[in-house]
Length: 281
Figure (spheres, rainbow, N blue to C red):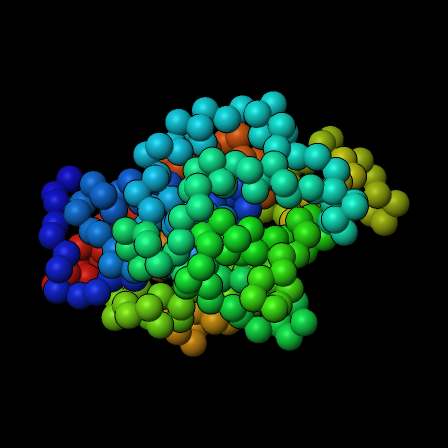
């Protein structure tokens, strides 16, 4: 594959939310490195913020072995009931993992300008976190309602950024990008009942698989809302390049399938390589 040198424009990278599907961002980043496209600014929502922070901090390679090598047992080790925090999952183990990756890094000290997007649950406003403690910003950005507890940050209760800005193109432009590469993960997804269990009559002339768990219902509901909101926002502020991997074979809880997800992200970005290289034109 030919390589390019992109210098003519200030390239922004906007990484969308999508829970475990966010590991597809890893493949996109790999392709960008391969063809020589280096984003000047990086913004992310939810899992996109985590992957974006790994790239912006220079810590991506150090975390890759853990991400790619995590099996289901390893993933489940980070999950424990969190009813005492007003959510289904206690977020402290995830907080500890992010601390292990990022330490006490400040957003302003990263190798590239970076912002994480969260949502003010009192107003519904999008909140772009571009300074302060990196892990605190990430914990707010990934705080999926009812699954993870909201985070009290700078006088506000903040929750998952996907509620207000699923693919943060505008945030990347606000950081100074004049051309944006956006990666959306929820435009091509399967419903929670797709292929789940053996079909049986549901009493209404249709079929039903295994009854989905509460976590699955909450994740699927959020993904549907994010998909519709992202389509609306992207129609108003179109990125110069939009990459939308086919995530129909995955659900949001499958963090143990990082290798497969990364491969799909890579192939989706490779299909857009001519458009990506043209950004430097």
